Amino acid sequence: MEQVRASLDAYDTPGATDAITAFFDVLNNWYIRRSRPRFWAEEMTVDKQAAYDTLLTVLLIAVRLAAPLP
Image (cartoon, rainbow, N blue to C red):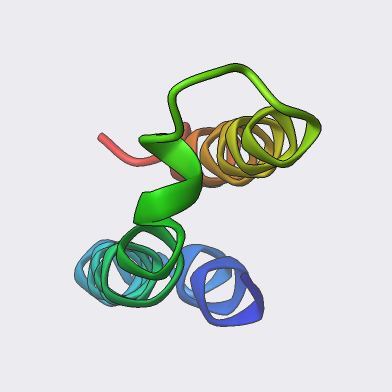
């Protein structure tokens, strides 16, 4: 987040985009793949709901962070 903010403050759009792309790579490789059994559970358990809520929160923050990009 700090790297994106610093890049945007310096009008470095490619740097900000690279930082966001790297973040999504980490999100995909670490959280989503690691939590796959939680997402694919048969019933909507508290654990499954927590996994969805966490992912939604992270995605909303990432979208807000990327909003100034052209």
